[in-house]
Image (cartoon, rainbow, N blue to C red; front, top):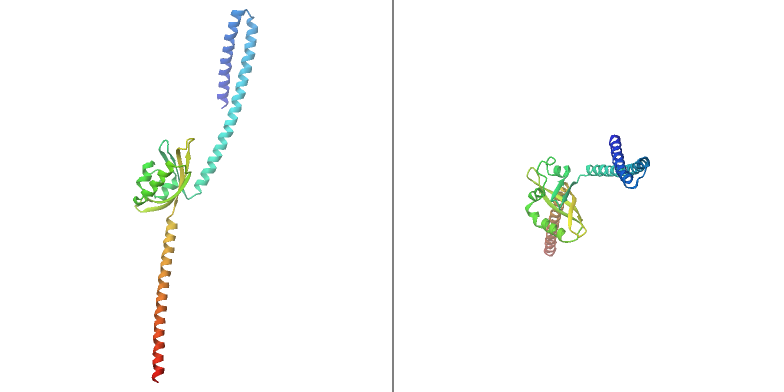
Length: 239
């Protein structure tokens, strides 16, 4: 940085001096002014201009470094948050039609990072066929309306062949004309939640079946009790 600044200052000084000397020579030729006064004036103007420009660039570089440092800190904080999250986040640039899948996104589906080509078509190719219609309908709605976020559940094929249920949350960025230019979001693996829901459904089913069985037994007992009561009445009449 010091060598660059010094080199720039010397080049700037040489350029400014050449410019002022050229202007001074023209004044000497056309107006007959003393060359000595022209040289001194040119040197003073040259040095002053160079110092002024150097000061401006120094301030600019200082502010630029502060902004760069602030951006770096923000990126570090974001990376820490993302690393601590179990969500598989992604970023789709609609203008360039490029997409980024995070390492966690790949891990959820059993792949190494960028094991397959990270293109938009990949996402559609591993989407469960039954989920295609409602996902496509949501995409069309996002492109033709002013929605800025969405949530949708679907299934993506795992590397081993089974499907992974996910909850996808997306946030849509638009240009000044309202056109969608970027969709960023995350996929949450719902495997454990689905397993727990299935266990709960199975438990509720067992409870319902046992309840029905108890009601059936209760009804049977009631019928037997009524029959027994009738037999007792008959016995009382006979004896």
